[in-house]
Every structure is written in C-alpha cells, then in structure tokens.
Image 1 (cartoon, each protein chain N blue to C red):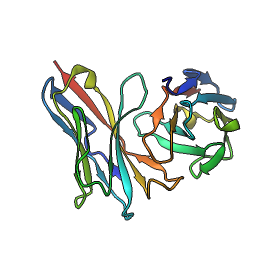
Image 2 (tube, each protein chain N blue to C red):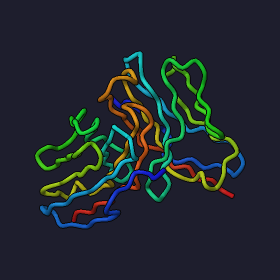
Image 3 (tube, one colour):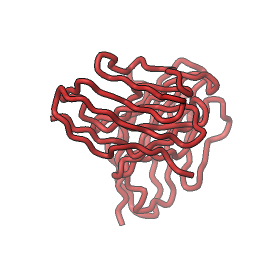
Amino acid sequence: AQKITQTQPGMFVQEKEAVTLDCTYDTSDPSYGLFWYKQPSSGEMIFLIYQGSYDQQNATEGRYSLNFQKARKSANLVISASQLGDSAMYFCAMREGPQETSGSRLTFGEGTQLTVNP
Amino acid sequence: EAGVAQSPRYKIIEKRQSVAFWCNPISGHATLYWYQQILGQGPKLLIQFQNNGVVDDSQLPKDRFSAERLKGVDSTLKIQPAKLEDSAVYLCASSPRPNTEAFFGQGTRLTVV
C-alpha cells in the first residue's frame, strides 16, 4: 500500500490566488512527521514546512500552511497569494517513528505539478 | 552557509560501465542521504549515513550500488555495472540530526544508454 498519496498530478492556479495541494498518508505508528518539499525545474528539493504527529497546531511558514487533519490522515499544503515563482513540483513526505530515532526513512509521494498562471 | 554540493551535474554512460557521484554535505551535518529519483516519481532513499556509519541501506541494490562516507563528511555513490533502469537523478541530502528536515543538492542526472 502507498504510504503517501498525492492524487493531483497537476494543478493550475491564477497568480495571487490560494491553492491547496492534497496529501494523504498511511501509517500505524503514533509518532511520525510530515514534510512538504518544492522541486523547481532546476531539480533541487527545497524544504517548505514540517508537521509532527503530536503537534497541536497546524504548521505555518510564511505563505505556506499545512492543513493537518489527523483523523482523516491528511496533510494538505496551502499556498496563499500564489506567485509565478511557485510553479514547480511539490512533494509530500513522511517519516515514521519518533524524531529521535535514527534510521527512520523519509518516504515521498509521487508529487503534484503546480502551474501558476499570470 | 554553503548548501549541499554534488558533482557531476550530468553524466551519460553506456550500460555495463561504471560511474561515481560525489557529495559534500552542509558543514556540521551528521546525517547524509542518497536518493534516487526516476523521472515522474518521488525520490526513493538508497542509503542513509549517520556520521560515517550506515543507518539504512535496505533499498540499495547492493549487487551493483555501493556508497561510502569517509571521515563522516564527503560521500561517494558508485554504480558498477550500470543498467538502463538506473537512469535517474541521484540526489544527495544532509540534515543536522536524523529525521529533521533534509537539505538537498541539485542532483546528478544519469543517463544510461
């Protein structure tokens, strides 16, 4: 079974509008972490935001926020006020197990290609 | 602060040849990862080092892939012999501690013909 599922292969948004990129995950471990990365066409993976399974509040980093719904096992990324430079591939990833434990693998989803239109 | 450095950026080889990739992580980062990203897919972890010890290499095809991290800093990933299905981008990443956010290099795009 897929541990990370991103159901939107591609998304389009108008500049200055908000967009939500979906991510659902599957784990039986009570301790886990969720990450979002951006990969522009240059190829480098850029860390955006992190949510721990025990965090009480949704994570926010500037224009990025993570809509964490633990019961539904979803961790959607919300980008507010989209910019042309946001056009890129976006990956959701999960680490299973406590953060202190080494050797806990980061598993990535298949990604969503976001295109911001002027 | 300098980022993760990788070389070469691009490599084209024939099948059955050997190839090596080099990675210099961010200074002070104890954890180093090598990922394989096949076109259209998310990255897949090949190997994870903590300092110069291997923490996870369960998805490394050990019959042809090898990696080392001497002195707990730079790392090399080698493929010998290469197959057509090894065509991918090989990403190196580092983090200050295990399981925190990883910082990635720009990757090496390998084409096996």
